[in-house]
Length: 392
Image (cartoon, rainbow, N blue to C red; front, side, top):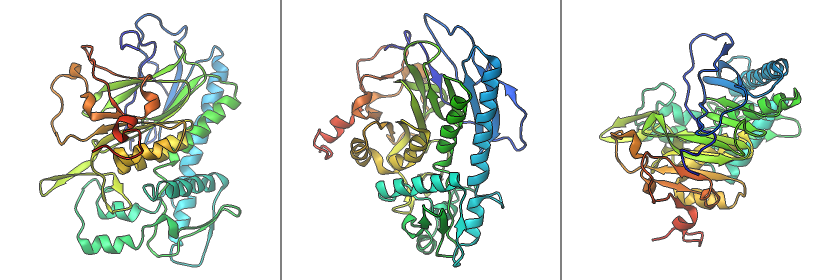
């Protein structure tokens, strides 16, 4: 696939959350861009968007029946807002807020079916990733100033005390009864690393139930596509360049599924001449290093979202081994080369040496640049030497 011949290119862009709710808006001239060199969709999509979950929800539907399209979009919106209400850690009446207030007591909280499903899946992935995903890591993020937007390196004594509050294994959860208890006062559940993906899945489920057969749901840069694309045989997805929010560095072909994005380039702080990412490794209590962005392509939104941060903190070698154990999972890593300067020429594209992809993406991903280049991204097979162990 060449950039000029791409039938469909969609650009991922993170969205900020307005302070007050916005009404439904028609963003037919905004949102994901569809670029075609030789053909265009027969009809433009119906697009609506709302701020929710600290991001912008954008639903794009291709359907000749506008009434059906709008009915589906409305149902999808309702599903996403319901997930947001149930999994919020800041709304006093949410499932999570109630469970967090009861931390350190003998009281259990019976979660709604949706919240229980999200928590159960998150705990499963926490185990599979050896704790690289941890729904109890909020106190750690507090210590590093992630939520305040003012990063700081916490003293060792603070990190040691916070460590007592972190650990997914400490969560007492009964999936049959949906009852959860946090045994230590000060512990907090945070489903921010998985809830958006679950909301995507619920939105697509609602759209399909309404009879919509093709569309895209984007929630803060994490998104899911379903059905056939409006142009071409495959969806072609543009991955955002970690050095330039206005550019994409690669185009990936997808039949269906979801993409989850994590990047340490958007939020960070510097102290003592060291730059620290806002993405923390719950296993070490330290900011993750070695990678600037990860894109996870998975069959469902919940998997793509939940695995993007673990595969970021694992790094490339451990992440490659993890991906190999999970068929159907594809990953694109961009290494941190230590450079802090933005590229001078957007047409140069990203250095292929900085990009590592899972083996199955070798024929479905193209690095974009103005001038054709022969270099290709490295594959996990090349990184691991096809032995499962990193090459020297």
